[in-house]
Image: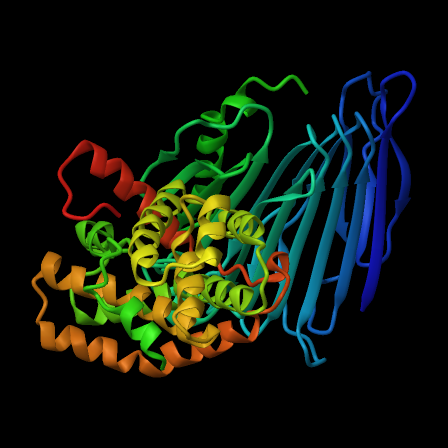
Length: 252
Length: 226
């Protein structure tokens, strides 16, 4: 299955964040939240729903998101993604591209991705931030369902701001010699990462044995956790958010 | 392998690499590595992540000198973006500075002057790759040298920290030979790519170990700087 979905959010004359363009394509279904009248400054809230079991082997999915000047978007998943093997060769791919204009912000928070046995999945997130744009994105990768050996996953995250690179990381999961190595995943089943370019960066790293929040070299910060289960991995990412100076003093 | 690679990968090369354990000291302190089997697993993980990243940038720097390119600031920024841990960036730049100092005496060149004017504290793989070219080596020589350093430093640290048998540890390193060749050869293939398109293998375990080591290093006595 090949699919391309698109979402554009802008700030209107009254300062409200409005969804200007929204094109879903199965299996990527975008559901804007319209249950109440939004006041100015409240971010647009859109849920990301998978309407068909995906990604399956052979799938090629792309989501393009644009957030216009001064606008704010929260894009949330509603259920865990299960990367599954399919009957087609070549594995599955999911790409998300997000462009954020100046003084705009996006929170992209999908639910955890579970890499099931024999799946072969590539995920890519590319974010282009204008100067002064804000970003928060969380990724939680789970190595197989309970008692299951994981298939293989490569997850790449690239964030650039004002044309320069802030973060470029490509993580490989599902190679036993790497999963078990203390240098890589240390035999832990869940890897959580969270990128925060949200106001003031931490000056010093915060570190505990299995999670940390570190300032990146050229702005922005990264939280990392390695845990035995997804709840713990996310609790540690929450702990990292709690000590992030820019996030703690956020106004939107 | 060219003699430039031998010189730069020699543990007696005066670049200051001997004070770094590559995360092994923290892993040993937490009992994540206790013997030869865990050490082999640690080294394979290190080679295929941090080792591969270093190899990619070392090969790219050798190629840059060979092609007359001077995009040192861009290589520096791209390697920063692939090194989220501040402790690892610090360790890379400390070794880079030491390597540059030794290199200025051994292979003086206007190319090196330009590199150090743009990046006075260069990342270790970048300066090592540039020196390899100045000494007459190829991208693959630089890649193999940094791959070897990525595992030989932690391996000798394991002998000192865990009291492992030096013959056994040497055999562990010898068994890594096919993987070392493989990672270096793969890294050499991307040597002439645009810096922003270079591979970016991450290592969450090493990042967490490096930060924890840095914290403990400030609080208590540790043998190695990283």
